[in-house]
Amino acid sequence: MRLAPTLALALVAPIAAVAPATAGSQVDPEGATLSAWSVLPAETYVPGSETSGHWTTGNAAVPAPYPGQPVQGFSGTHALADGSLVVLSDNGFGAKAISADFLLSVHRITPETDDADGAGETSYDETLFTFSDPDRLVPWTTWRDGGCAAAASAGTLPAGYTCPAPDRKLTGWDFDPESIQRAADGTWWVGEEFGPFLLHLSSDGALLEPPIPTPGVKSLSNPTLAAGETANLANSKGYEGLAVTPDGRTLHPMLEGAIAEDKAAGLDADLRIYTVRDGAFQDGFLRYRMQSEQHALGDFIMVNRHEALVIERDNLQGDAARFKRIYLADLRDRDGDGYVSKRLLVDLMDVANPEGLGGFGDPFTFPFWTIEDVEILDRRTIAVMNDNNFPATGGRSATVPDPNEYVVITLAEPLKVDRRLLPLRTDEP
Image (cartoon, rainbow, N blue to C red):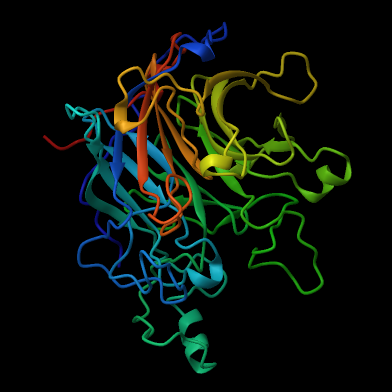
């Protein structure tokens, strides 16, 4: 049964003639200022939801299993004009084998950023939809339609967990969604990491076509990997970024890590950016070169027809974190070398915080391991969020689980934003 959405969203404006930006946006990394901060507590669960975490041990602060479905792991977002956010949770608890009881979902949250003390609390509003495959388009066994039954027959289910009735809902055992965009027709495109695949979903989260594979790329978790076939992409290095052009018709999925062939060619720091039109991968790709082969992609969204924001990060957190940056990239490849150009826009480890928002000092730092969300609020303002990897610790504290932090950063120079990519209305009164 398809899940009816509780909120109808209009995230893409009617397509109109808009003059393309012909010159690049100006940047001034030194002028970035923290203008709002809000936090969603780590232990935020969907009310009345199924228990989860039966394959995990949790930690001392949050022992498993958990009393519901945690609203966490934000790996993609869209801002709405009323101040709320659409957020995509990832596959659950960090790996396919331990995330079978995590329902893949998209939620709506609202950051409260105007508290007098500068320490706003983000609220969970509702779950907009859960991923599903009612038309059986996934050509392999899914957890809630055969996978769990097989595990039960093999006697490998964890204590206290019983198989749900087959319902075609999709879980973190099936896919690892890491990026999301709204198409011009109101459907959703999701970039995921197990394949890596592109998933095309209806407005209420139902799969509309079989998972679309990446030409010539398979990760270690790809369910179609044949016996004796060698994967050429590491786990968790799939589509962390998925940008959409202002008209909502062209996608640019971006890998988080380098593929084996590129590494063999000495291109360990290169990430591939593909072009997809009408669900079909186009020939060729662009390259984004990271500052270090040890870095990873956090997010990738368009600013206009040719400019994009890219989060590039190290794999460190807390006091050890050093490199968390947002770059302004230009996809035009005007010198024809196959690479996008990039300029530093914001150093997330050095953001001016003259008002001491969030109770933090000046400068403000965002020292989380996985920073996976950036959104444009207006020409001078962007929002950034972390994936808190519930119930992990280490970003802000060695003992307290990391929350989902939401920060708003005012830029020193305006971006040349195509208005069709700005936050749009919701259909509710």
